[in-house]
Length: 276
Image (cartoon, rainbow, N blue to C red; front, top):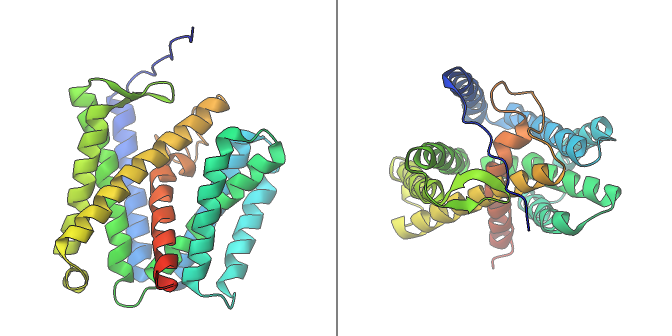
């Protein structure tokens, strides 16, 4: 018989305030970089990829974390000058990240787990800049992805906390509920739709139906990415991936949902590149 999973205490007012302030500062910085675009935006996400690789290896093996982080940064910069198209690189990175994530629960070799983490991290370095560089819609596409993930995260947290109810996956994340998941999916879909509705260039590209469907899919995979990272930390008995973000833990903790949306976007970019 399995032992009950302990439930972590809810954050108090002080911790919640720290979370909000940290989130607002990070959101402001990343929005500025997104609007700026170009190399500043690219370098920020390459550095984020390096930090995520470092945090992953610190969780799964507690070795080689710093070399892996540096290696991912170097690879991200080097691949920028690759003759391959950004869509091809994004699709390859997304596929590698997805396969690595799917393999992670079954892998026991330390080296294989480390390689899964490197693949996971490279999605940030290659998919995000490829999305931002799309002519005409790059900026709006990034803002759409932010809206889907941020609306999902915020609504899932407060809906689950307010309504409670049956647990979504208690063996992986004891605090998450079905009410939070549904509330997050609804909010993420609305957030993605609003970006489309308020952006003339984006609105003229497609009808509302595909945008709503893509936003709902993005919200669902975002929550799946969150659960995947929770399962990884639970497997290795880790609460936070690091302490780099006050009130939140590490970059891996904050970007697990966004990673899943990047994988979805990277595969879509590659399919479009191949005219599938």
